[in-house]
Each structure stands twice: as C-alpha cells, then as structure tokens.
Length: 445
Image 1: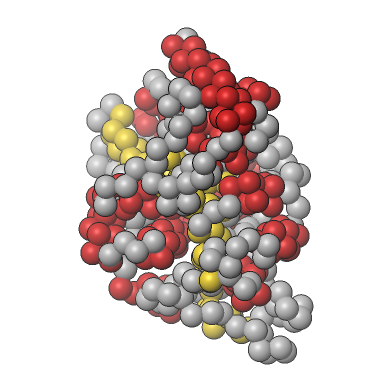
Image 2: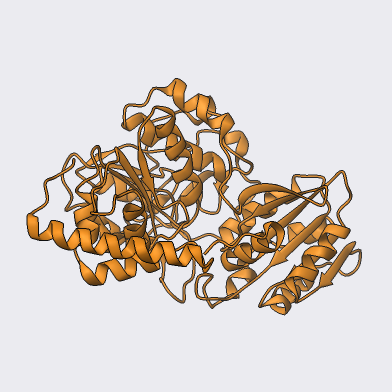
C-alpha cells in the first residue's frame, strides 16, 4: 500500500511533521492536554495534503471504523489482535476522530521528517466526516458499526448519513472491503448496494432478544421501499432480525456465527464490537485462534466499561452519550445487584448541546429498581427532572440525590456504595473526562 512521495511534497511533509512534533512536546511538557488535535491543525496549514501523504505510507492498509457507538472499543480490540501478531499499528487511541485528530495520530507514529513505518493504521472516524476523508485515506477496510440518532443539533437523521456514506464508498476501488452491521437495516441495505467486497457481522442469538422494542429506535422502516419492517426480534434499539413484507428486503447473513464467540467487557453492545473487530481481523488473514486468545485479555479503553478501585471501592464507568448507548448501560446496571448509580449530564460541544435525547432513554427501568441515584453535571436539573418523571410515586423506593458539584457528587456516590458493591457512573463524553480526572488525577483531552 505504501507509495513514494514527490520531493517537494516530502519537504513540506517533513516541515509540517517537525513543527507538529514540537507543538506536541510543549503541550505535553506544560501538561496542557494530550495534544491529540492541535498538532494536526497546525501541520495541515503547512501541508494541506498531509492526510493523503501520511496515509499513502501505511504498508498494508488503513482500517477505517465509523458509527455512532462502539468505535473506540472496536478499534482497540482490533489493534490488540494485530499487535499480538507482531504488526506495528498507528491508531487515534485518544478518540480524536475528526480530520485534525486523524492527522495527529498518524504523525505520532512518524519520525521527525514524516516517514511513517507502520504495517496498519486503525482510524476511528466521526460518522459525519466519513465522506470527506475516504478519498484521501483510501482505506483497505471500512467497518460500519451502527447508525443511531446522536447529536441531532449537529448531524441530522441516520438515513441522510447513510446515503452520503453509500455515495462515496461506491467510488472506492473494487478491492476495498466493507464490513457493515447486518442487524442495522440502514447499514445492511448499504452493504447490499455496493460492488465492493462486503462481509457482514451481526448476532444470531434469538435468546438475547429484548422483550419489547425500546423507545430509542430509528430505522424500523425498510430502507428500500419505506414499508414497516417485520422484526423476528430486536437485540437493542432497531438492531435485530428483520424482513420487509412488501419488497422482500431482509437481513444479510453474518460472516461469523456469533454463538461461537465470547465478547469483551459487559453489555450486549460489546458483543457487536467484538464481532466487528473479529470479522475485520479475519478479512486481514488473522487466524481465529489468535483472535479468540486476545478477547479474554482485553483491557477497556478509558470510560468504556472501565473499572477502577477508588478508596477501596469498585467503580465502573459506562459512557452514556445518546439514547441507545444509555439504554444499554442502564441494562448493564439493572442486571447487577449494585444499588448506587451516578449519572452525569453535560451539554458541551463534544456532547451535543441538545439534551432532549434523555427523554428517549428508558430511565424507568433504572428508577423502578430503587436504590440511590446521584445526578450531577452541567444539566443536572434536566436529568433530575427526567428521573422524577420516571418515578411511580405510589410505591417509589428511589433515593434521588442532586449535587451540581461533580467532585462532591462522586464523594456522595462513593459513600452510598457498600464495600461489596460497585458504583456505576453513567456520564456523557465531557463528563466522562471530568470524572476520570477527579478519580485518577490524570487529564485526557
């Protein structure tokens, strides 16, 4: 996959990377953050074609991972599998998934003159910029995890995103491998339309169907003809086994049998992440034994089912940034015997400034079990109101504690957590960063 670079481009590339590495050094030395975005922003001003020039040097190809939920966990698992086989991998591990973050991640693995000596690059990409970066990156594999409503004030509906993806992916070389989620009707249809090689992933486990469809559903209509889909069962949100009674559109067969695979971490959503990474690894020629052996040793990325010990007590952080993701983290909590939960709701740019999505979350299931719910964050009162509306006041056993100061909220939640239980923290993205900084003393930016 690596290509020779023209001399003039080489000079600008070297200058851009050298300046960016200096910026990275100063930002980290002064403890101003992780320098995961700024170096790329500066470097692209010097050499606008930097993403292309760096991508061309990746020897065996780039794996692009896109979707609303699960990008970080899937990326990290695939990276762990490849590194287990001895491959050198570049990866935007901090989660900076816009253009400047992608450039910064590739430069991190390059030397001071811009030479990039890696076998693979794994780039998790924000779903809205996929059409912008596919052409300069020219990925070997595209993993399409899912499409849910997420930050509607920024992105719009899932069908418009899917149409943009399809239009650009269809222009890529025929040997590009596309791996869509077969259980997501929108992405399944995307895969069925492409001329590139398509390998689906998904679940084949009817025993894990939900009792009823959740409030947070997006794509329950046929993407081909618009008729309501018939679901044999749903696993989460609109992901499930489906057919269209009008035009015959139906779920494609996944490459791997999900019943034969363990999963990383907790929650059914991580079974999807596991299968996505495993399917990509198989397409890259990795033997299944290596993949199976990697799964039990997998360590969570920060905030994604990450477990910590604080003052002798167990803490589990479950990123909860949209309706579907939060419904799944609530499912994890309600399936445990732990009775204390901290919910932290922020509305900063990275979270999405419209927090009305919390009314699509099935908070009733969390409230019904009782116990202690501590709420905090920039929009603490919005979350508290949502929980109160979820309450059956006739026989409520809920102990709701409102604490706007996050540090105090964490202290209160820890004090209310018995020594033999786990404190579950459900934060939005920026709230997760704040929570981790308070708990660990380390800033991630």
